[in-house]
Length: 238
Ligand code: ATP
Image 1 (cartoon, rainbow, N blue to C red):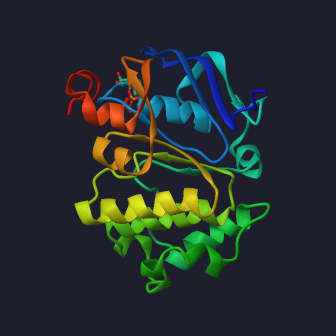
Image 2 (cartoon, helix red, strand yellow; image 1 turned 180 degrees about the vertical axis):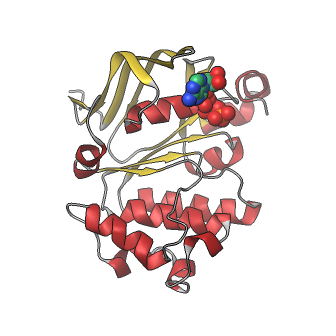
C-alpha cells in the first residue's frame, strides 16, 4: 500500500513575468528521507525551492505542491511553519545586528512547538561559544550554522535548504555536511535541499533529482552520478 509522501510536487509549472521557468516538475519525498535537487546554473533549482517555500515569486502557474497530502500553494509562511516546514534560505539571511541568541530566540518565539534555546544550540558547539556575537561579525560558515540552528529551533518535520554549501570554504562545507546529515539521521527530520555543489550533495544524500532547463530529467542515486561521467558532464557540468 503506497504511503503519502511528506512532500510532493505534482506537475508544477512556475515562472516570472519574463516567462515560464518550470515545466511539469514532479518529485516526491518520503518521511525520513534526505534528498537533493541538482542542476546547472539557471536550471531552475532556486525557482523550485521558492515555489515550495511559497515566496512572492515565482508565480505558480499550474500543478500542485502537497505536504502530508494537502496542497500548500498559497499558504502564508506562518501556516507552513506551524505545519512543520522550516526553511534555510539562500545566503543565510540571519539578522545581521542580532546576536546568535537573539536570532535563535526570534525563531523560537515565532514557533508553535519550539525547542529550547540550549537544545537548538546543542548541535552547534561553535555557536554556543559565541552566543553574544552579532551575525554580521560571523563568518559565512558560522552564519550558515546559525541559519540552520534557527530552522532547527522551530522543531520541524521537514527542513528545506536553498544551496546550503554555496560560497563556503571546503572545511566548513564538510562541517555543514555533517550537521545536515545528523539532523536527518539523529533528529529524524526529513531534508530536501537544492545544490550546485555536486560533491557535497553526494556526500550526504543518496537520492537526487536532476533538473535541466526547468524539467526533471532524471532521478538518480549517488552511485549513478559517480559512475556516469557523461551524465555528470551533460546535466551537472562537472
Ligand atoms: P542558480 O544556481 O544560478 O541560482 P538555479 O538552478 O537556481 O540556478 P533559477 O535561479 O531558478 O536557477 O533560475 C532559473 C531561470 O529563471 C533562469 O533563467 C533565471 O534567469 C530565471 N529567474 C530566476 N529568478 C528570476 C526572477 N526573480 N525574475 C525573472 N527571472 C528569474
